[in-house]
Image (cartoon, rainbow, N blue to C red; front, side):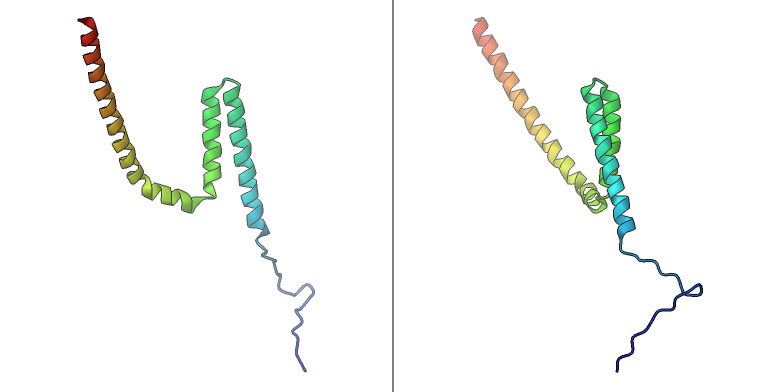
Length: 114
């Protein structure tokens, strides 16, 4: 014979809350909807000619969207110095190419003026 426990009912029964995770997913959905709406509003403001307001609203929407992606933002933050070093190296290379092109342009101009 198997004994099945029957939970107590009535006014003296301990209250049980079902924790199905629905509360958390509702909050996440809410922030996603607000972030998407804010990004759309920022884009609409930019298209309407209000660049500054559109940029501010779009930045706020981006921050809201990234709030749910904390591990991703943390990894980006840790890798940021490497990205900046790579960008600095790329800018140095481009600067060298521009200087070379400028020097060659001066040589061509001096040859054409003769």
